[in-house]
Amino acid sequence: QVQLQQWGGGLVKPSETLSLTCAVSGGSISGYYWSWVRQAPGKGLEWVGEINHGGARNHNPSLKSRLAMSIDTSKNQFSLQLKSVTAADTAVYFCARRAAPKPEYFQVWGQGSLVTVSS
Amino acid sequence: EIVMTQSPATLSVSPGERATLSCRASQSIDNHIAWYQHRPGQAPRLLIYGASTRATAIPARFSGSGSGTEFTLTISSLQSEDFAVYYCQQYDTWPPLTFGGGTKLEIK
View 1 (cartoon, chains in turn green, blue):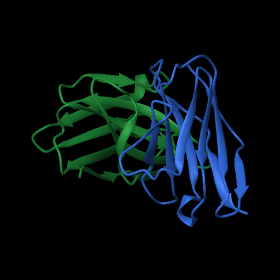
View 2 (cartoon, helix red, strand yellow; view 1 turned 180 degrees about the horizontal axis):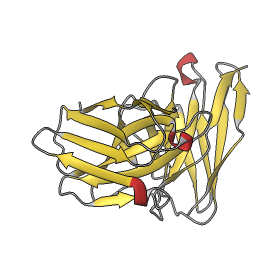
View 3 (tube, one colour; view 1 turned 180 degrees about the vertical axis):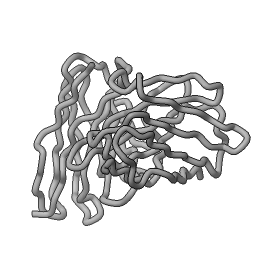
View 4 (tube, chains in turn orange, red; view 1 turned 45 degrees about the vertical axis):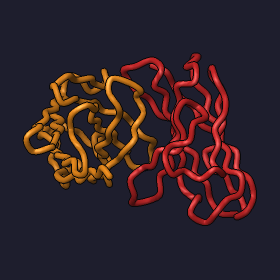
């Protein structure tokens, strides 16, 4: 059974970079797209972006200019960096898996990492 | 961007009763909708995809219906573990993939 274990986040200062990593266990990182989804306090879910094993990326247009994603197939891990954060980036960030190339719903999710942007 | 609107925001239902949750898309998405259950502090769980197909190990009391712009998630006989927040998500036209604002299902 595939499981996603994520870490990183915590308290990040405004204008700095948020970093999160998600490790895949119980299955291969190949053959799927690996996404990040976030949930701001009291809000619904927002898709952030995704990357596949070959490095192909898709982004939420609202975040594209600040977003960087990477994948390390040797470690079965993928990562998110969000630059120039503000209080609006405070959220629980989830990593998730979807099938490739389709369909684009999320079959497996991580537990979430709380990121608080504050000075 | 396709906007997904869920209603009601909060639904109060007694255990053993039926719950009906709605999701409306701002334009037609065919049947490209998924539903998720999210309990506090846990990972979201995929319930339904393709509007009406239950995901692996999802009990038969969960059912989905609809096409185009109007969709429904029905839980036929509520169990204690079903009280959670439910989200719909469209995957017809993207980026971005978009979710509804959620329906909180609470015990009456």
